[in-house]
Amino acid sequence: MKKIWIPLGIFMGLSLILVACGGGNAASTHLSVNLMEFAFNPSSFTVPAGQEITLDLKNNGTITHDFIIMKFGTDVGPDFGAEDEPNVYWRTEQAPGTSGTYTFTAPSQPGEYQVVCGVKGHYQAGMVAKLTVVP
Image (tube, rainbow, N blue to C red; front, side, top):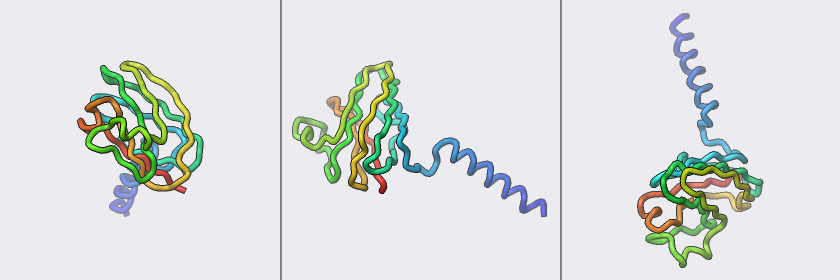
């Protein structure tokens, strides 16, 4: 009987840790994102369609970073540039060493959206993330 309880206890403990850390990437109306050279942490977010989203950004880097959500079905070309501007759904900028809280309305179209930093060269360096919108 003891052999069953030990694995069950371990499983339950791990489940609680995952829930506490936001494991499973459940839809949320509150996102906390750290910006750094050259990454978003976390690099994937899930939000409910059409809801107001609160975004807490903290720039842990030494240079300015953007948080840009591209429109559904669009991706940045070789690097973020003027040709990508018409495809921006929402954007904000965060100065180095600062934090900010922003709100935006999540897209109403469920699907995957590209999130990028539009500062020259940052997209090419891998500063890209994924926003998943669910019904």
